[in-house]
Length: 291
Length: 176
Image (cartoon, rainbow over all chains, first blue to last red; front, side, top):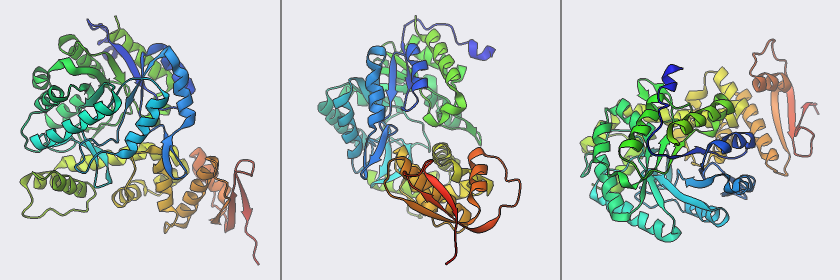
């Protein structure tokens, strides 16, 4: 337990705390609400099939509306596929339109990635090649989303699943160019950085020193499992102390505009983790980041 | 770089449907022979297992007991366009197993799929045929306890309907 307690030195800046909630677990929501300022919602998980069409679950939408002022809602998508050569997912945008008509959100976000090719789903997110061609394409799409929703839009760094394509930009350089051209915000997923460092010797200090931190609005912490020496990006565990310490370091040293640290866990992990452990985790994060 | 061709080749590598050619970019060769690709596929499998073991408990438990879960799911992943919408994943997986060569797996998948449908409000009634006594099997799978005795063989059927208390009823099939 000592290792878990070590990171509890508070960050200098006060940052809000958020957590994933995917609906149909009111007891969990009740435990989390006193501990969080933001609830992160993933539209793909709160949707259901009605008359052969994907739509938002009315039951879960009622739960989210009832949150009221207890926490702000942020939407975090997984299937927009902003980097697909053939275009993004119209289904996702239809759901987002519907969601935003019913619930006030602070901002919305997606992953800087593609999840489908010619309509075929990969089952995983892949990073875009960091070329000028890809940058032009994503910037155009980000601008279109900003124009459509008039809300802050954030993109997240994803895990490098496969080796990087030889590119025109470094990871940080690509994010800098993207934010400079569009004004979009960034989510820095700290656990993803750790996965990349573990799996691909990714140089986190070099990345952080090159990244323009002003646009980092949100940080993510999570934890998965190790398999065959690879750290896998499955959100099934409580965070490791190293992840929280890195997030603290980012907040203290660079990302001073960061507003929230979100603890992400998949709904399927909840029975194994337990409501108590999740609440304790959020309490630890609150102690670490809230002054 | 042609972004479309790049993405199509990577999709093919993940689906194991693309064979690298001599004139492919060295990058595609590198990915194809990387341990990362194997682990990426593993990641896809794990995400699906996490979802399905919660949403198709009976079928996943049976596949685990038969040591067929990973093989069956890997095959399903490579052959199907799996939606990112979680709610669609379990029905699609169960549907794919309804014609499984192992009759018990087929029966359990058909039963679980029908039960899922009626619990979501489907007004239809479904009948699933079994060649072993179902209640012992279902109890064992639902509670994840081993089968203590030989399960009696015989012709049975389960009627699944939202109009039945508990949504299903087991019958010994009668001849003639």
